Length: 87
Image 1 (cartoon, one colour):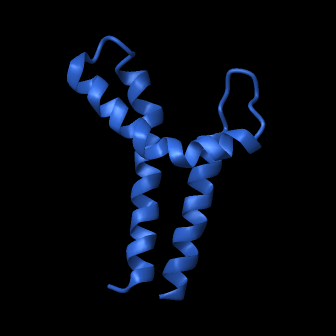
Image 2 (cartoon, one colour):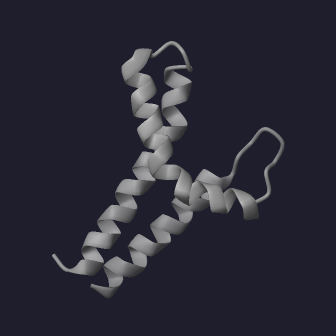
């Protein structure tokens, strides 16, 4: 495993973390998941917000819809594909 493959795997993992951040609040609404779910959501927020925050400043927010996770996942998928083809 070279460095390109490692970074590509991390980009893929980060995409799944962003997806978890989107889906978990739908399954476990705030206040209903207990303390462990609140801790997990806090961890997911801390991991993903450094990526989603800057994208949110640039990408149009369509009313109540936040398109920054979709843009981030597309960008991370592109990075992973380029790095996998380079290795």
